[in-house]
Image 1 (spheres, rainbow, N blue to C red):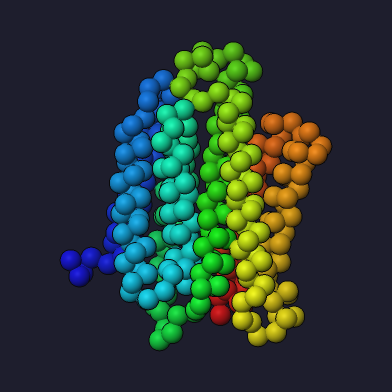
Image 2 (image 1 turned 90 degrees about the vertical axis):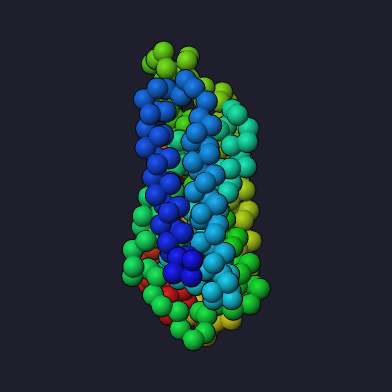
Length: 273
């Protein structure tokens, strides 16, 4: 199977993510009135294929596979899938998969764009354990933010159904709305901690000049995102912001992150030399 490359395995993973997304549509239409073991198994199968793709890419370059936009995007999706599979072991939170699978599918389709995965040069673009720590923690943070946004979406959906006295809210197997609120906050907090560690590690990476680092578009964007999530967490804790506004803020922040991540990466001399 030498001809079956890491990209082929990743393509298979994206296709299974797509099947999970289609199945999730039926779960939405049925109002989550049945357990979704099938969806969990689909995401598990996709995760296994995704992991094989990541491992094969890592061995092929002898380095943590986060050297370009394809690899970074694949890592974000992989970390989100891994986190969901752990959380999904709890039956009350398994329905998070119906919200996660469309996100994973969309990210996977985007990652498959050929221009995101140029051929590797004679040397990897990044080296060293500190670089791997920086990249891994940042991308894991994005995964946690994504799951937090999915949980916030579930919270808003259930709150809407309860507000308008829909029968779906009574028959649904979604977890209690209070639990969704707690899960959302904890996922975002975990992502924020990982993001902080990643940013701190990035300060000590080799770079041409100090001025070049602080004026880099990706660094400026990362600091801005850090402030956004800090403000959301602080407003929730200190200003007693309503749960509904907090959930909308988490979803909006992650949508903005997805829409701007690749553009700032392409504009960054440090991350896209």
